[in-house]
Image (cartoon, rainbow, N blue to C red):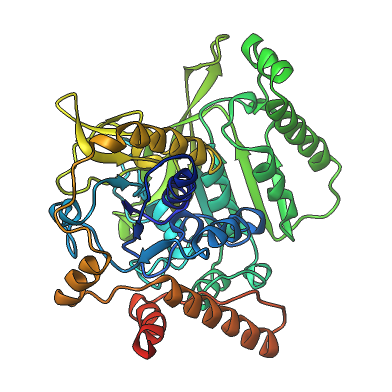
Length: 463
């Protein structure tokens, strides 16, 4: 079995498949492929570095991979280094768990202006993604973040937080230097719905209050509730908790006696309609955002009021969702950004392509938390096990065949032992930084792909 993607979706699928051997008469040989030299996908490159609880998921994934019954081939790009045709020649089944790393679009005038960014790109930068530039233009004092989900909160928190307070995390040095030079004073988060309809989670919301020297600023006019809101508050503890948290912050700001050097503003019932362009020497650059004031419609939705508000800012981050990327040769839904499938079985013209499956965000779209991914994998592997006696038989299933193929093409693939070496190296960099710096650092993430590959493959060279 080949699984494409070593993030939570891929590792959960591999774990479930491996454990299913005890309940069946089939023995599985499982290989995980990833285009990055290091494993763990979204957890390593999509979660803010100051999220230790979520980063802890890596420990669970690490335990699965460290058993030794699942092989890892990192730094291998499916579609370039190895094709779908190659995979079908060497494996009885292929499971795509490639996730979603691109930003969903926001079709409003001015979105293309200089200073308008996708949140996913910014997340990749501050998480040390190897395929992104080392520098990020952090030049604006006032910043707008459009979106009311957890990614919007992450982006706003990282932008508003003092860089020195990020040093205790695995933040790469280039990211620390960039954030430390930022002149930001005000970050505004805008959502189109009311406080009872936000897509945050309580933990993420409460984390905003943990930032040192950052005031949370709310507008009483945004606290609008209707029957649907009241019902959501009564029936959903998460909604109740978040509304109470916001209401408490509103009271606290009225009692505040000292002002922080930075402010994080939260706005509700604001729908973006245009990014405003500067004039003169600022032509072509972001100068602000125009919003339409919204109101609740009584049924859980919103409608426009015809009132428009302009906010000055010089950088805009859209955090309106992620979008999947197609895989060469695999049917793809361009509208939803997912591989065409039914319960994880990949479809072509409504018929299952034998031996081809999908799981995770590339299967269902970028919704839900990481925990939902495990249930997703259970469904997909369940379908595969139902089909197991009817899978197409690989032409050359030898375990060495894929190694020989990659080596013949000059692919500098990395392995699990290579990751252990890189992991140890990053922890050691953290220890060195701790010894010479002001705070304890858990690790310092290596960013350049070539350096990650060199460190990881040093183990292979000695075997």
